[in-house]
Length: 74
Image 1 (cartoon, rainbow, N blue to C red):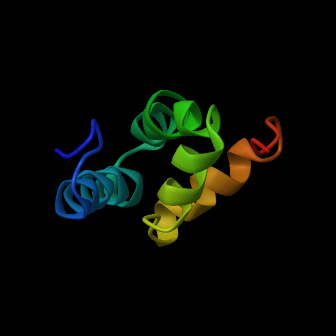
Image 2 (cartoon, rainbow, N blue to C red):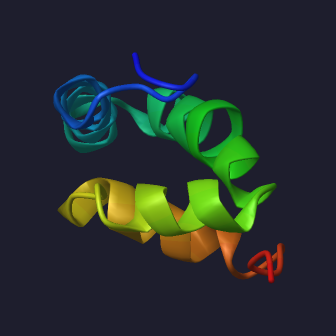
């Protein structure tokens, strides 16, 4: 961790885990990923932009669902 930010390697591992949960989990697990893990990343423009670069196929689908009820930070 440098300057309060996680390393790119750590972030990739975290988002790989999110992707695995989204891909292999049932509807309840997918909801957990969407609401508990991804939705808070919409609070800050820098965090939002960084997260968008780390999304996989399944987390991207959940991310897009969030866009139906939240606006992207500006």
